Image 1 (tube, rainbow, N blue to C red):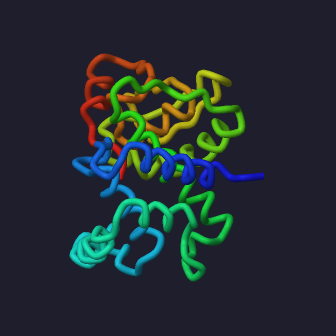
Image 2 (image 1 turned 60 degrees about the horizontal axis):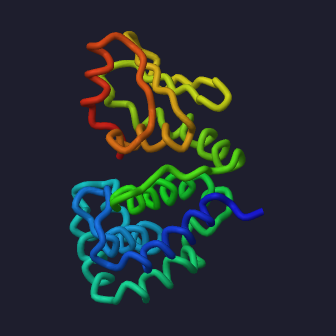
Image 3 (image 1 turned 30 degrees about the vertical axis):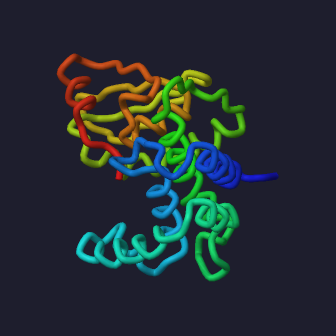
Length: 210
């Protein structure tokens, strides 16, 4: 069975080619080409260490600049092929753990930056895969939240406390939308927030995600 990480990778690659290198995304000021370059460096270059270690970000910038000299079609072809053989991202369990959210969120970064976007109707298997991953990864992504954060699925009513602090805000939505909220795409995430007004305002204004 094809993993969600794989299907989102393929869908992102196809959409990138359809829209072109200069199309906008929700990832800061990145264009589609910038985003593709980021994904290639992340899983295929030792310079990716600069993504998580700020003092080494210059290495990442240099590797990105070198890749960006290539045309979008070449870059997308490499991205679609998957990580190089030596990359730990090549291992199935790590691919699911580290790429499921990465490729889903960045696919939506491209989709939801375009005019006329609408949420996709993901099947139950995809929603479950996103839920299993965000209930763990989300704890790190909400560490800086000024209030408690509880996710609630609107399809099953299941809950997961990402930050067990009071006061807390309950964020309700489908797993696919909860993921986007926790990753900082709050304006585009179709969710409802429940809590006292001050707590909701604090969470809405918080800098979530990576």
